[in-house]
Image 1 (cartoon, rainbow, N blue to C red):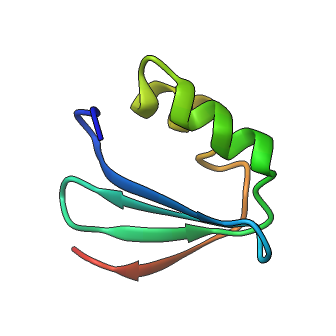
Image 2 (cartoon, helix red, strand yellow):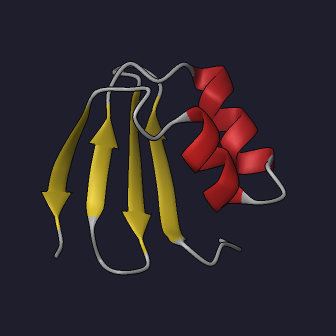
Image 3 (cartoon, rainbow, N blue to C red):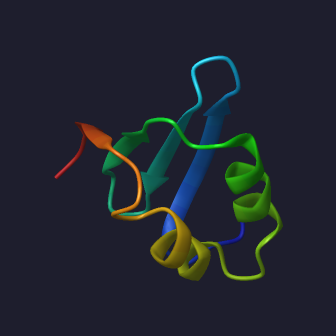
Length: 67
């Protein structure tokens, strides 16, 4: 994936959980993320900027692993 801050993104449509792995090794699960938000993230020219604007601090999250 082409992003300077995000390493990978996964999405589970049934549970609406967005998994984001950052380049620094941390992995987070964001709950109740609409499929449209995930789709817009994947289409964004700057995935890191879209994440900061539309996902970070807007959805409940759980840190899964990392620093």
